[in-house]
Length: 140
Image 1 (cartoon, helix red, strand yellow):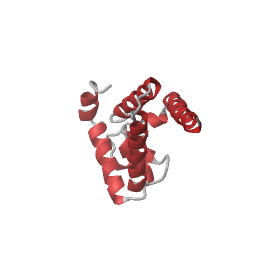
Image 2 (image 1 turned 45 degrees about the vertical axis):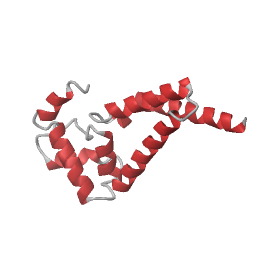
Image 3 (image 1 turned 60 degrees about the vertical axis):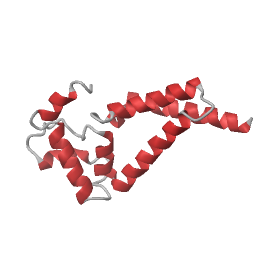
Image 4 (image 1 turned 30 degrees about the vertical axis):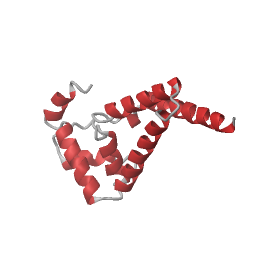
């Protein structure tokens, strides 16, 4: 996905256009334009195909829809979760989940994978697994 991103970045109405619009919206509306309202991006450029309804970047999408504060909280959440997965003593399960979260966010640099229910189902399953395991460890 990352390798093909340059082509998707340079085409008319591609990522360069939608990311520019997303960053402009995030700076103009620091509280966001509203959750699930990224479909309005077509109103800002006729180059954008009508089927495109998000910004193809997790962070830009969150910042444009829900605001800069929410994007900052999201960054803190992901950082804290990855840090939790790689804390000492290392657990193979936690390291694997940490790598999966890093992979999810790496893909999220060029796509909006919050919109994929199958991806989010796995994310919540992994998050529940690591938090449940940590809670179990804390009790014992």
